[in-house]
Image 1 (cartoon, rainbow, N blue to C red):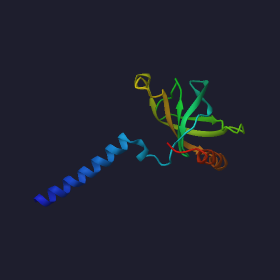
Image 2 (image 1 turned 30 degrees about the vertical axis):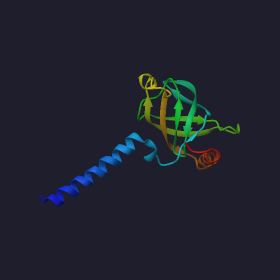
Image 3 (image 1 turned 90 degrees about the vertical axis):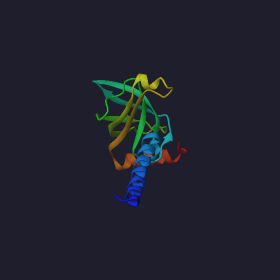
Image 4 (image 1 turned 180 degrees about the horizontal axis):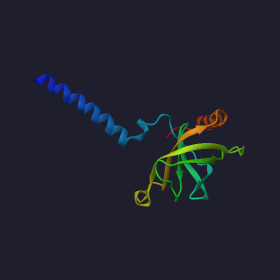
Length: 138
């Protein structure tokens, strides 16, 4: 391999490393939609029990749920999200993208889980987007 080829190969590797590191360190780079800080009441079922919780932030494609009872990563569940206008709650099918354990929350970050929306009706999605656009992004 020539010195020029080795240098080009190294630069390509450096770019890949930089992009993957930024996506890990700065999650906003890998998010599909901007997040907004928004506290809204929600209900979901875990181990047969209904859990009342609150959102910490949300986007058109997911949200962070503040809860002491996070569901395991990869699990699917349905939640009911109450918008501030007190209209009928949104019903959203979700998948747990990640969760924060009690040990991880010691760093001052809230205990809970990040979820990705997997199924939401067009009307509920429209209502959610209207709510998001009324708030400044994080």
